[in-house]
Image (tube, rainbow, N blue to C red; front, side, top):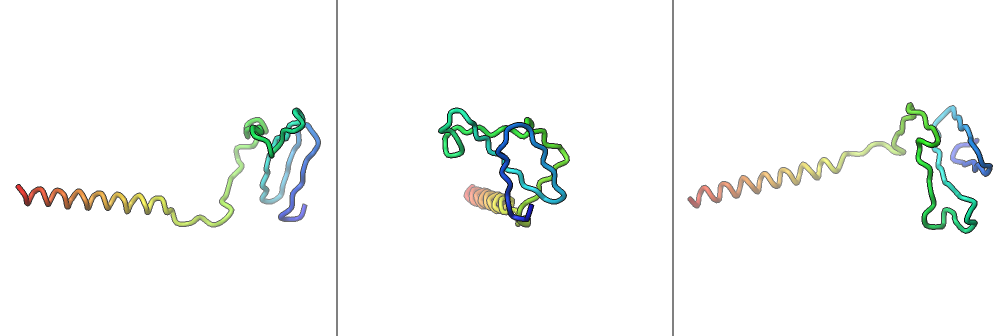
Length: 97
């Protein structure tokens, strides 16, 4: 298959997928009954990965480079702000006594 393309399997049953490079597999369960149910309908069932026997040595990598962990930076800034506020409050109450 060429890069950036897809192959849709329309036959029922078990399938074995092999690749000699990176591969993204998207599973969509499209039931035959009722006929109006599908990906457009509410309640479409997607089978869990255990039922399709994914091997544990599969390693997921991010699609783009890992960025700076912004969540840790925000948590650090908030923590430092709380500590500074507490220190200022303690100094204010010690002067007042």
